[in-house]
Image (cartoon, rainbow, N blue to C red; front, side, top):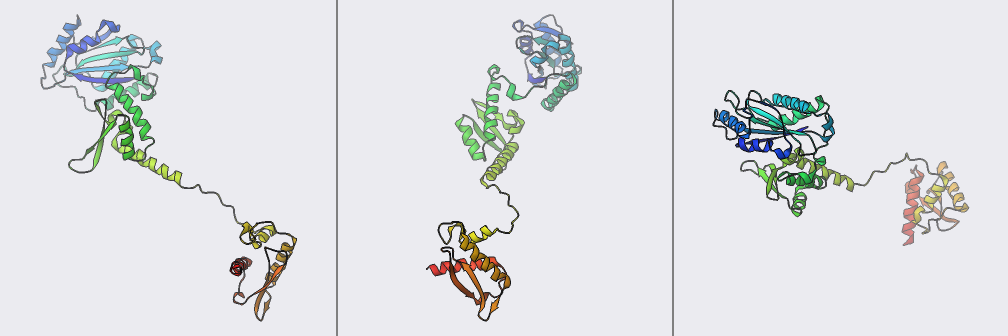
Length: 354
């Protein structure tokens, strides 16, 4: 269930439209009017509206539409009952009105014409009426177990008239572009290419932006009027969110790291032989001689045998199967870690290669 509210100044026009025989009209209920014909109905409205000449638009016109899925259960009596409850909740009471049903569309709907000048001459308030109407429609839909519509996406665009057709076209464009743009400059440029102009509203004489107006096919729409999600503040928040997502996509994924474990004999030997091909250039696995050399060196390191000239370390030559010699590291007699010796050996090999 949804409602469309219109205010006007011509009672004759709204009466002629609602009671048009081409629409298969059926009058449901009325109050305070001479219902003999269209002219007497309009005359009744006009007489009461003169009780408060300050109101420029005394005509109230509401179209209540229901889903096609509910048509089997929506008799004239049920629709009139729902329409009366809607009016009561909206504060439209103690005034002239009539309700009629149309059969010119595939979905059930009724029209309500009422005088915004009440029987006491006071104006029926229209403050926040669209917000109140939306809330009341949802409440009545739930109360009577009516079909809940899926939103703007389910509206049949080809049946719309201007400016609603342009408004829904603009909605579709904004939905796509706001979802993929990362800043206002890109968004405005993309909208311009599709015939949409964006104009920002500023607060007073400052540079502070407080709203945005979209222009398409000669029609102007505030962003929030197209849809609540398209107010300036909500579009700006969506663009910032898109920028964050773009940055996250640029950051490399963090790969899990396993707990380091002691290297195997083969791994150690590969390290000595310049695994990854740092020294021997081929990165081939260690052979038996290399393994034997490693075992001897490991034994020497464990003993930490000291001589007068320093610690002697026998290291496997990665480019051959024998020992390259004994290197005396007098300055490193306090080295406790075999890996430090390995690094030092690699640096020595590089130095000797020059």
